[in-house]
Image 1 (spheres, rainbow, N blue to C red):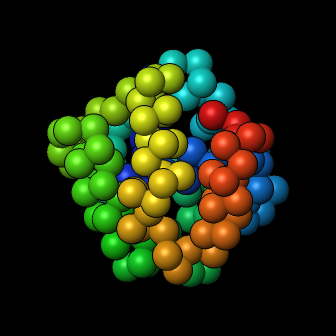
Image 2: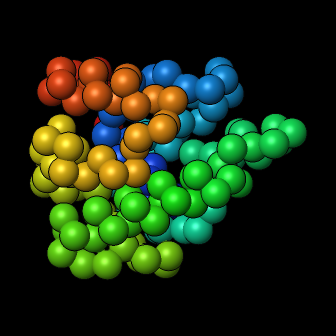
Length: 138
């Protein structure tokens, strides 16, 4: 199987420590992380993905908003520049140990955080990165 991810969630995964919007969201996120840790690949999608799924029943899910789409655009650019190939809708990404280490190094240095300002999790992600990603579940 393949995990469907929007581009900015490639960064969110780096610092995910088990906190989320709701208990259902967190439980689902944990399952996505388990799938990735077991070696499933990633398919880049436009709009809501496997992580967003529990939020889609909300009255006005933020994952459908323009700010999430702009985060995707900026994250795809940064990840593409980092990995040396475009991150477009339909692209496949392997989150192996080497790629995760490369992404974490760039994230903690601030090189790939253009998508992050304005996100409510910005400070938490910065704290996790500053702590060398201790407690990150992936």
